[in-house]
Amino acid sequence: MAQPNFKTVFVFLDTDKYCSPFDMLVAVDCFPDSAIFKYENVTSEEAPKIVFDLLFPRGPAGAAFTKIFINGSNFEEVEKVVAATQNAMKSAPWGNSIIVDPRGGYSTAAAAVAKTFGASMEKGLGSLEGKKITVLAGTGPVGQTAARIYATEKADVTITSRSLAKGQVIADKINAEVGMQRVKVVEVSKPEQTAAAIQDAEIILAAGAGGVQLLTKADIDTAVKCKIIGDINAINPLGVEGLGSNDDGIDLKPGVFGIGALAIGKLKLKTETEMIKRAAAEAQGLFDYAIAYTIAKDAILKKLAKATAK
Image (tube, rainbow, N blue to C red; front, side, top):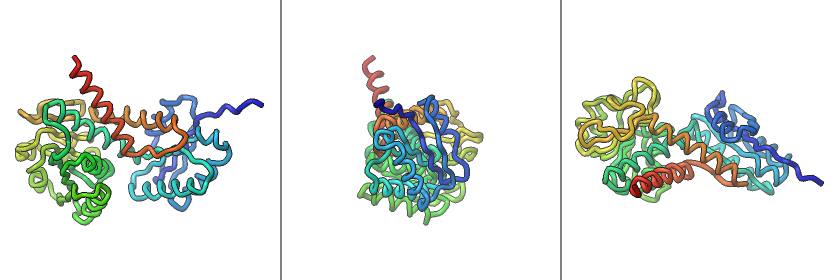
């Protein structure tokens, strides 16, 4: 009896009203012959029903070709759906690979941290360990993920937030995860408060929403210890005054190097693509921000090694 020939299928579980086409297009570009099913407004209560229905029709062999991509703009809701999905799989005889990249927050943060790491190494400033880093808009999707990754690299992280209480919740959560007080929060509800938040920073990451400037040239002039500045905002006005989207290691001023949003975005896209390919190659597993950062950092390390070998 001939064995069935299974098509790769991506099942998108999105907590938002509309499923983002961005990640679906990346998945299709990775696997042009794949199929995509999408479910929107997914809650943690409804996710297990969908998971059970996608687990069993193809059997264990087919399940290895069925990939779950969990997405959404609300991190808390996404995390609940991830937990519900994993719990559902515990009661099943087999599982699926799960990709988690909420609105690109994981892959973007991974790329941003990796790029700042690469700039620090390239400029002879050393690794991220012990570095004082400020993440502006540190409670947003990219900001809090970047803070988490910086903390795992043993950096001393300051996140800014318009709400001190909201920022403290995120800082406490990250500190509990890493088992050490690595992250603190500073309230920045007015532009004039930014200078105080970055006064000790050696690295600054502007992780705000598109079209919102977080860092002015005047702010940069006050950050006398700063050596590297990154920005994830590619929509005018950009997040950092004077830093272009395509800039990659340029001098913002003597001794201060800038990395623009599109320079970060190139690595982000490569990172997400590799996440999807790895998930497709494995029958089971969770592919989240930790995997994303491993991929992005490895790409930077290879680039640095190649430059050294020349």
